[in-house]
Image (cartoon, rainbow, N blue to C red; front, top):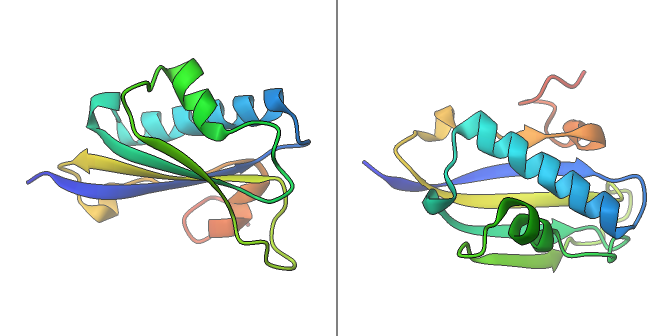
Length: 124
């Protein structure tokens, strides 16, 4: 039975620049696609957030320009600026139409963001 499942991901960038945000977002999305065998036709929508210290580019631009997700609904937002939280972080919630169960979904955390969900990554 097909259901809508959420696929989470996050990564970090070294600096607030368009190339950094574009490259990190593309890398993250490609890892999410590969880990979950995702076809763009099965993506219901993608919600991106950035920490408040990143404003050089929208992550959705990387999805459109580099992955050609022109028909996928995409939106960007700013993450809550909680004191002590991770900086320079791009987060993704990808909504996927799939036959996979929740325990079959692989969430992807890259670079410094692996510590956000060390319980489901190889972070120590």
